[in-house]
Length: 416
Ligand SMILES: Cc1ncc(COP(=O)(O)O)c(C=O)c1O
Image (cartoon, rainbow, N blue to C red; front, side, top):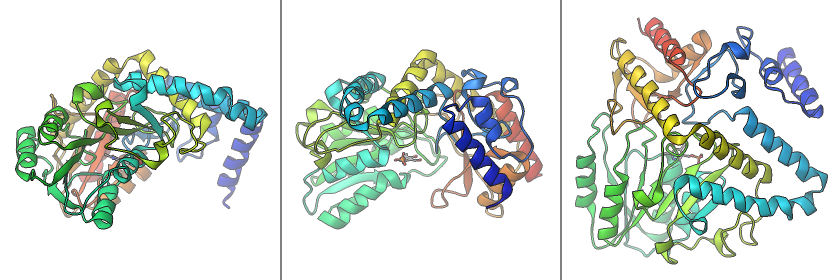
């Protein structure tokens, strides 16, 4: 093991043993290429600068993959873990279990549904898997989905297709088209008497396009179909009201835009589903712990409540406005950067805190990603090649114009 890695682990171990993961110590214990700047020097958007525990040398534009958990959320998670370990059985099946119902209630309020419509999960993928496995499919039935789904929102339907002989009708959404009417029309054209469900994302993982969820859900309902929405990229970054969207199912993750502990998620199941989705895990009820769901990560679930409190204290509308304003700033700055083509929707009703640009075929998005990180300490996402040769930027509550400037300057240097 290299010396610096050993020293890093030793430092973390000592801090943990002391029960003190103070943000400064945490950040300074991390290996970095350029030394550290004092956390207080770094503006953190809507967050207090010492709440964000990112490596101070890193410009982090990757919340769409995993968000950085803020200090108060991490502290609450660790505090609950310590409480749990004082007497795991009495606490884990006692007060800490009961308090998870408060977490569920907060999660339900966050997305605008009733307590009995909300289930806690480990992630978006798990929620969608439960739903896909909990439907009584028949051979010959059909699901309409899109060619822009993340594997976490697609694998379950591929399984349904193999297992039950259900067919998938895949609507194409070419990156850069950004035309909701065309998308709705394509869904409408694929409806057949055998269509059982629409399955699509709220914000596309590839380009961040805001899908017309309310219109597609209404269309699905008129056709007697289920509307199943993958909201992994939405909750925490933009306001979400599942009743207003009108879908039957909405799954999301806590560990992206909500900045909650990794391995947390929410699943909305509308009341009017009335047994049409009947997952094994929910046979004994929808509480966080039941006989059919088993034990979950109690500290993480309690940390999820702290993350929801963190968001609520700042205010979701404020967060969304900040994220979109930064997106607009980025969109304008990228117009003058050579060789790239922004494929995300222009600032306006279809835009989201995710922005994607396409690179010419001669430029390898993965290699550029490495140079941005290693030379400039800017972290972006490489968009999977099946969507396009490009990169995706996430702008969240802790990002600032300075982060965007750092990215744009790095791109200008690398693409010159
Ligand atoms: C649209 C979409 N769905 C699902 C996922 C999978 O998320 P998780 O691993 O939290 O289930 C992602 C992750 O990036 C995503 O972007």
